[in-house]
Length: 73
Image 1 (cartoon, helix red, strand yellow):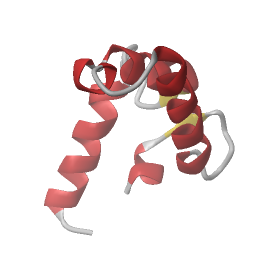
Image 2 (cartoon, one colour):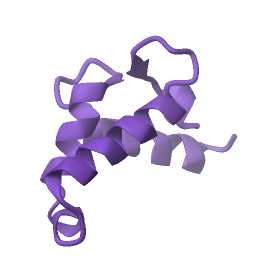
Image 3 (tube, one colour):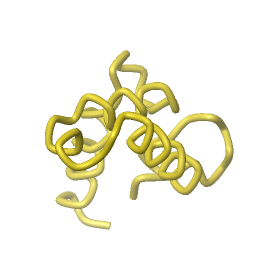
């Protein structure tokens, strides 16, 4: 992995990590989806919540209950 990929992964993590603990909880991911204005124009709140849950399950590969930078890379 090069520095550009790592930087992109860090930006993706930081954009969703509301409490700054270096990992993304399910609640943080749901908030991110539900509050995204562009997504709101295409999907209902319940659809966005379901999409966030599905994404979280796919990304939380170690099933720790959080998405970490290693899981985003």
